[in-house]
Image 1 (cartoon, rainbow, N blue to C red):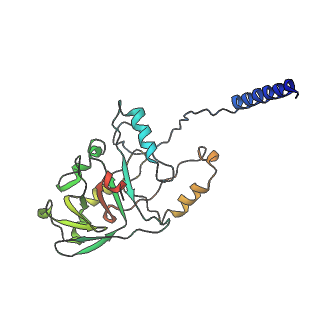
Image 2 (tube, rainbow, N blue to C red):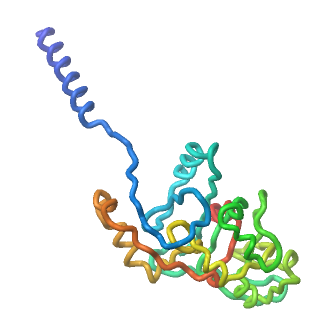
Image 3 (cartoon, rainbow, N blue to C red):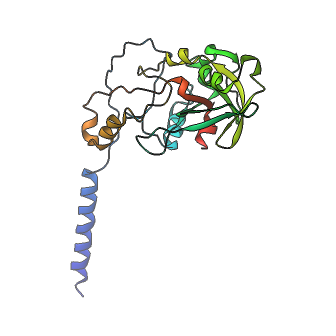
Length: 239
């Protein structure tokens, strides 16, 4: 019954749907902002991170590698902090040989290619930086090594226990020198101090995304190197 009217109604709905979709289609684009920083850049390139240092999805790294991997060196980093916001992590670390123990508040994961952009290998007091294929190895800031009783001569032999796993100490790094290394944004490479910066982090998360671009990017305090350990990037990502 009334086949003609039904056909006309269906055609009208189709045209309306097409029109609405055309006018509300999503467009992607990039906006550029000049952010003055009084620091000497470590490298010529770009730093990709969240404004409030929230963790980024793995797909972000995959996109960057797909878009720029043939023209540039893409070097990821990872942090391990307390899963509870505004609380410090207390990560127990023990020397398996002597039993001396201490703790750190965060772990930093670096890829072997990190040396090509930040030159962290030049800060080593002993040993070597991470190499491809490294997994259960670590680099200790000298302050942490002293607390654990690991000497320069023991690098490459000493092992430490972290989360029930043994890690071979392959290097010692000068902690105070690492604290002086800043990236393109003028901030340290160590994890953000999520306790003292809790209000900034929460404020940014609660802010309307449509207003964020108009606001200046805030700077954050980071953990001192003496409160961290360095592990291979993939090992931190697996935690």
